[in-house]
Length: 635
Image (cartoon, rainbow, N blue to C red):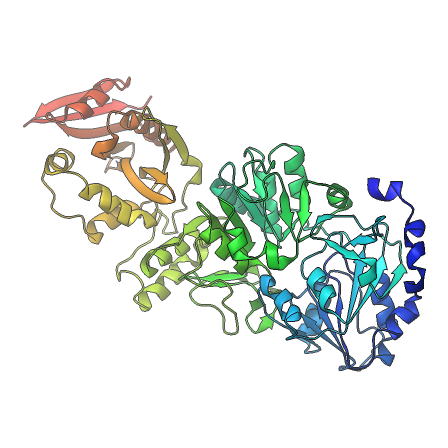
C-alpha cells in the first residue's frame, strides 16, 4: 500500500509514546468488571485486543460487549467454560461468531436501523465506557484513519469515556469523514496482523439468475447500493454492460472494484457527491483494501450520514438491492429471523429501501431464492402465505416495490392485495404455487375461480423467459415483447376497453361490450407448450401499459394454430404487427406447428395487408360472407 510504504509507523508514533501500553494494560486499565464496551466492527475487529480480552475474561465478570457484525473466528467463551453469564454480548447485527450464542441465550440482539445507532450513543441514551478500535497509523498531523469500517465506530469512539486503539500499518488509510486524532485516543498498542478478509462464496445458478433479473431493473446512470448477502453482491457481475453507474451504499465488496476498473462505475452522473463512491464500510479481499487505500474516489462516512434516507433520496435513480429470508403474499418482508430464531439483523436495508423509494426514479429491490432446503432435506418455499410465527416484519407492505427470485420480478408498489398475490405466486417455485393459490382463495384475496397456467400434463406451465425481447419503433420508443403472465389481466382488460366500437367489431366480429375477469382469465393463464400470447409492454417512469398483443392458439388439429392480434390505436403503423407475426412464426416452429390460420373481415384492410405481404406462402385464401379465411405454411 503506497501510504504505508512511504512513512515509518514508529517515527509517526514517537510523540505519543506516553499513550503506548502493553496488551495486558490496554485491557486491565480501561476495562473493569461491570462496564460496557464496544469492539470495532466487521473486518476491522482489533484481533490482538480481542484475544487479550478473551484471555482475561475470568477477571472481567459482567462486562457487556457491544458488536455490529462480528466476522472473526474468535470464540469469546473459550476461557469461560460453563460460566454462562461471564460476558454478556449485545449485537446490533448478528455475525457468524455470535449466532450460536444468541441461539443459546448467552448473547443479546438489539434490533435497530443502522442509521439510528449512532444517535443512541451521541444522545447518552446508551452510555459506553470503552471502545476498542483498529486504525491506521497517524499521519504527520496526528490523524489516524478508521480504515475499512467507519459505520458506527466513529460516532461511538467520539462518545466513549475511553478509546483504546490497535494501530495497524496494514489497515488502509481511507478518506472522507473517517479520522480520529491521536489526542482523542487514550491508549494504543501496535499490531501487524492481516486485516480480516471476507468472501461471499461461489455463486450458484439460482443466485446468478436472480442477479440477472435485478440487473435488468438497473438503468444507466443509476446509483446503486448492495446490502450484505451473496445475491446483492452477485448483481455486480451482471452490470458490465451498464454505463456511468454511481455508488452510494453502506457497504460494498470486490465487485465494485471490477466495475470501476471496467469503466462501468464512474460516479460522473451522480446528483450527490459527484465523482465519489460513498460508503460506510467495506468487506472483501486484499484487492478491495488496496483499492480503497488513500483513494480520493472513495469516501467513508458514519452510517448516520450514509444511511440517512433523506440523504440517500438525493441520489437520482438510487437503486437499493437487499436480501430477505422470506416474503409473504402481501409483500411483508422478514430479513432478520427464522421464526423465533434471530439470524442476522435489520442493518441498513430499511434505510436504503425508504431512501431509494423517495429518490427520483429510484428502485428499492428485495431479493431471495424461492426455496430453501432444511437440515433434514425438506425443501420449503420462501414465498409464504404468511410469515412464520416469530418472524419480524423488517420491510412493511407499504415500503415494498420489487421482489426478485430466480423465477422473475414481482412489482408490488401501488398494487392491490389481489394483484400482489398474483405477482408473488408468479415468482414462487412452481411446486408451491398451487398451495399458495389455495391459501389466497381461502382468505378471499383473489377471485374464487382464479387459475394458474397449467400444461397438458397437469403441472404448472413455466413462464418461457427466453422469448422476452425488445423492439425499437419508428416513433423512437422501445417496447418489451414478452409472453403473457397471469398478472397481466388488468392491463389486457384496459387494452380491450381502449378499442372503439369499430375496432372491437373488426377484432371479434361483434361489438363486444365487456371484458370481464371470466373472459380475460383464459387469455393470461395459458399452456405455454401449446399456446402463445405475446404482449407488447411500454414502460415510462415505472408505469406499465400493454399496448398490443399477438397470439396463436392450438386447434383440434395438432399441427395447426390460429392467429389473433390486437394493437392500441395510438401504436399502429409502427411495424408492431409485422414483428409479432414473424416472432410468432419462430415460436410456432419451435412448438412443432406447421400451419397458422385465421379469419379477417374484408373491412380490416391493415390486417389483410400484413397477411398478404407477410412473405409466407398462402395455402388457403377463401372469402365467405365478407370474411377472408387464410392459412399459410410456417416453412
